[in-house]
Length: 98
Image (cartoon, rainbow, N blue to C red; front, top):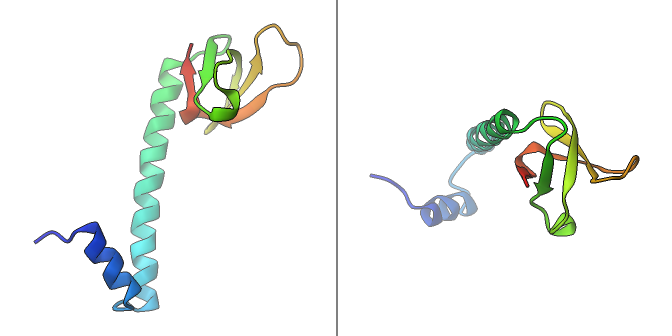
């Protein structure tokens, strides 16, 4: 007996849960989102190397190529090809090989 998303949202909106229950629901949702994000970051890290030419999957940086300068736990530093300075710190999940 699986509830549909609309049914869950309706139950939440109608106040059928206590504050403690709402916090519990929130904790479960946040944990699922964080797990999915960390898997994406791990996959990105495994396929990327410093010095590589990459693209950033974001509207502001669309159509530009960058050099991958550094990878940290969740972010990557990229800088436009050929530039000595400047660049961006972006989430690893948005970085892909060019």
